[in-house]
Length: 385
Ligand code: NAD
Image (cartoon, rainbow, N blue to C red; front, side, top):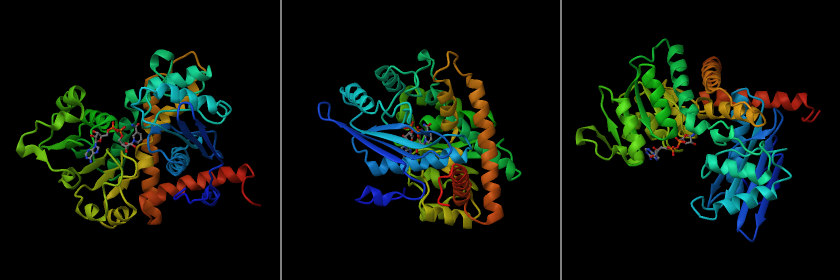
């Protein structure tokens, strides 16, 4: 769903949403929404977001992204997303969260399983389970409750690194010695840097919202991982002037691989024209504008799209979905193995499809996802005959 018009019914298209449920509770001030976008390939699954500005349109757009992400990675869940309009830093968070899931007790877990997104932690997932008295109500619960703490494991960043290696191999190049620049050194950036360092890549730049550091000869990744663990985003504050980066400079440095792993909308057509990397692997969601994708494609820069490269989290969430009622904890090694094989294969498939059809890699990825969803809808008799 691209845009939501004043009339919600007007904004429903051929894919969905199948169901939008709004809930509220005047006593706690809770207002929330659940959007089930498309379940042709399986039950709707996507994280639960808590922020003071959540809108129905935002959650519907994210639910649609989940429909494509599950289909693109070829796992059998459908698109869904939930939102609670509330400040996650408020001391009343737990009361609001409990009120939200109580109101949705007829939907969770039969139509929707809660998960982590902005403003939600592993502990909140545990609260949701507790409120509904059902182990199936949420994924992302702490390890101590038998859950799969997939954020903590760093599976998304690990998958981004696997995707980088697959794309380089496809181009006949090696990850060993490849010079990589990162924008964003949070959950995704940290885990991707760790894995790429293990694989022999040279990290030449990294940044946080507080600044960036650059060394063309290669940064000491172990040092920066330790500093980041200690100081968070402030890790880059003491950088010597010669190594310091101005905001956004990391995107246009001389390097082989660029990994945007921070926020959306950072690469527009003008930035795209200046990018010197030959491979961009999108760790963040929506870092490039549609115009930027066209510029990059024209300049021969390969882009691995966000919902292909950062799908490690949904692979882990699929394991967590299966583990909800099991007494056994899933083996993290099996999760990493699945992330690696799926993301490598998917990176290859999407790049090959783009090459053979002449469309951008984003269009290629969307082609594959929409075709899978359309086929599932046809097989289920959900399309007009
Ligand atoms: P995070 O909050 O842990 O880290 C974000 C990092 O980006 C921080 O270091 C922050 O300082 C930095 N940053 C923010 N604005 C910046 C700027 N203007 N310039 C440079 N650095 C900046 O978030 P995360 O979980 O690592 O998520 C990063 C991106 O990856 C988001 O787009 C998110 O939607 C996407 N993503 C995350 C996951 C996941 O499993 N965590 C899964 C799929 C997609």
